[in-house]
Amino acid sequence: MSVPKDLRYSEEHEWVKEEGENVRIGITEFAQSELGDIVFVELPEVGEELKSDEPFGSVESVKTVSELYAPVSGKVVEVNEELEDSPEFVNESPYEKAWMVVVEPSDSSQLDNLMSADQYKEMIDED
Image (cartoon, rainbow, N blue to C red; front, side, top):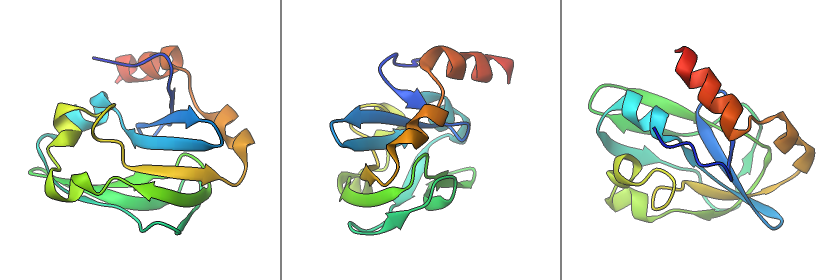
């Protein structure tokens, strides 16, 4: 199970990559493997404000619909439009092609509440 060291992780299985002032967000390989084959991804619009720990979209698999939770608060500045036509990217490439949104955080100190790769790996190994 891949857990890239350069990312931070939420308890809800989202990953966060710091990119200058902004953060790129997606779901982890562990999350997509638990969900099964992803058939639909619903994401917010550019300009929407996300609130930390609140839903900002959903992924639908053949098994279930699962909400996506914002790991940080802030404004959506970019959305991965490719997921609309190719939701299978979430299964095939959760850390590269299947990023969900880029957010301009309103409080970058919220990143300190996220887990390191080692902490996240420990959490999923316990499940």
